[in-house]
Image (tube, rainbow over all chains, first blue to last red; front, side):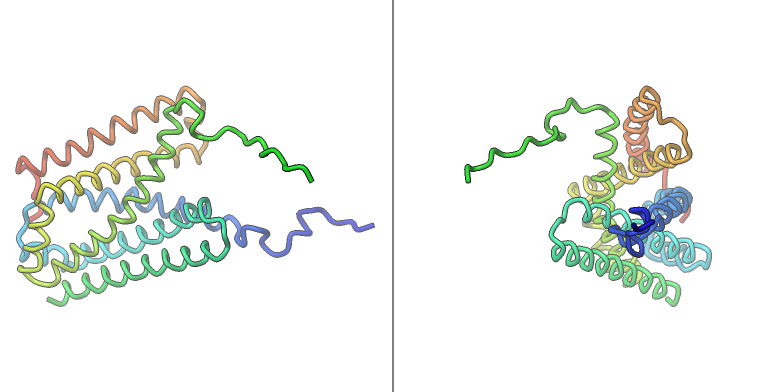
Length: 125
Length: 134
């Protein structure tokens, strides 16, 4: 007679293929986004009606560029975690699920690369 | 073999009267998906700023059009709702406010506060009281 629990029989990380990392990362990025999102909202309201020169001047300053880059990166990571859950919930066929997951991550990486390149471009103007 | 009768299904969202907590949950997901589309506009704006005055002018003309303003208001409210309801979720994760009457009240509060916040931001921006950073 085998002395093992059903839990032990689950290989590796089980049917979800991951542990509590997703849950934890979603919460930690949420906390970070309360702060970075608040900063972003105050900044965007402060830049209403700004000329191109003053926008470049603002975004080229090191701390503003760093905070905007951090906001974009944490936002997109939080977005990937959230959209992953949406795809998990609604896409049931394994093929469709993998395709949508790859498409979603490619989208996040493309938006992130474009945003960070624009920020570097602005800082170099 | 005799054809099987369809198996009974458990009741789903179409059958319930919508409690506020259900509405906030669904709205949280919907605003999250909307804000994912909003990242395109954020990247577009950053690229327009980096591409000189003319590129920015084109972007601003679109943003200031009636459709542009409506879309921006949608993103503003979505961010306000997702942020406030996200804080509500974090409070739940810490074990606070999870009883039915409190969750109901905080749900109503989040809906009301997100509308006030988004309307306030637009009122400041359109009345010329914003733009304090330039």
